Amino acid sequence: MTGIANLCASKGIKNITSTGYSNHPIKELPQKNIGIGNICDKFVHMKFGRFTGCHGCYSHATTKKFLRKIEILHPDTIHLHNIHGDFLNLPMLFDYIKRHHVHVIWTLHDCWPFTGRCPYFDIAKCDKWKKGCGNCPYPKDSYPPSLVDKTAKMWKLKKKWFTEVKNMTIITPSQWLADNVKESFLKDYPVKVINNGINISVFKPTESGFKQEYGIGNKYMLLGVADSWGVRKGLDVFVELSKRLDSTKYQIVLVGTNDSVDKQLPDNIISVHRTQNQKELAEIYTSADLFVNPTREENYPTVNMESIACGTPVLTFRTGGSSEIMDETCGAVVDCNDIDALESEIIRIAEEKPFTLEKCLRRAKQFDQNERFMEYIDLYQNEGEC
Figure 1 (spheres, rainbow, N blue to C red):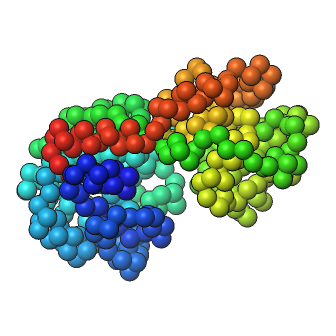
Figure 2: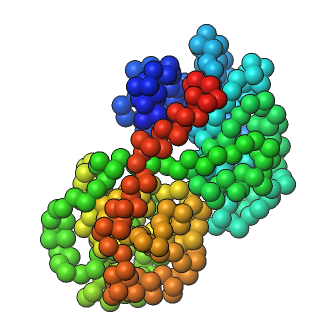
Figure 3: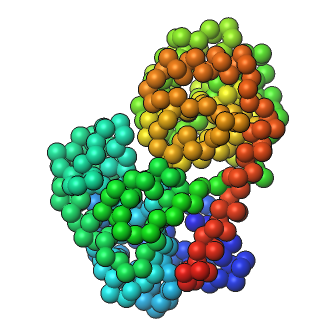
C-alpha cells in the first residue's frame, strides 16, 4: 500500500492512505494518512466479534468519523485492501460506497471476503462458501476467533454488503484466488490478477558467514521461513523431514520461530527466532541450498519470491498460489501433504542440482515490486484517479 502511494505521488496522482489501528503498525507511512480508530475501539470491536461471531459489525462512531473525512475528500477511487481487522463497520462503509457511486478497486489478500468467516478453507476441505456457510469446520480460536458459529448469517450479510456495487474491480495476487472469486458471490465483478512483488534491490544474492556461524559446514542447507509457525505453515513436515533425512548431509534451518515453537523441534533443526533486518534475511536465503515451503494454505507467498531473488530455488506443496511463483527453471512442486514426494525431490535436487543461480535471478526479474505497482497506476489512470 505504501509503495503504491509513493509511486502515485511521483506520478502526480493525488492520493491519501488510510490505516486502522494495529499492534504492528506499518513502517514509513506516507505523510497523508488517515488513521482509523484507536486501541480501545479495536479492543471492543475484537471482543464483540469474538463473542458474537459477527466481525465487521461494530466501530460505528469510528467509521462515521472516517466517512465524514472521505466525504470531504470526495475521491474518484477508493482502493481497499484487507478490511477484516476489527476497525471498520463494513455495512456502513459499503452503504456509503453504493450511495455515492464511488469507483472501487479491491485487492483481496485471502478468501475472507466471500466466506462466512475463514481466510482459507483448504485444510478444512470445505466448499460451503460457494453456496452458503454454516456448521463451520474452521477452528473457533483461529483468526478471526469466534466463540459461536454465525457463519451462515455472516455469509448472507457479506453477500448483501459486498455485491451490487456499481463500479468495482477485484484484484487478486494469484490466479488461484481469482479462480475462487469466480465461484463465489463476487463472481459478477471483473477480476484482474496483479502478482505481489518484492524489493529486488534488497533481496539479492548476499554473502555472509551464516553457515560457519551455525556450524553447518558443507551440509546441504534446507531453509524454511514464516511469521507464525504451525500446521498451516508445515512445521510438522519439517519435524518429519528431520527424522528421514541423513543428518550428516542435510541441515534444516527455520526462521521466524519462538520459544513455543522451539519446544516442538528436535535438536537437529536450527531455530532462528528473528532477523534484525531484510538484509540479514537475504543473507540467510543466500546461504541456503534449497528453500522448502510446505504451506498447506496460501495465496501468493512472498517468501518464495525472496528466496528465488537471492538465488535459492524453491520446493513447495501444490496449494493456493504458492506453485505459481516458480517455473521449471527455479523450483519444483509436489502434491500437498505428500511428504514422501517432498523427501524424494529434496534428495533429487541436492544430487542433480538442476537449478542454477543464473536461472533463479532471471526468474526474479519478474518480482520487481515497482513493476507490479505500475500495474495499479495504470489501473488508476484508466479507470479514475485514487
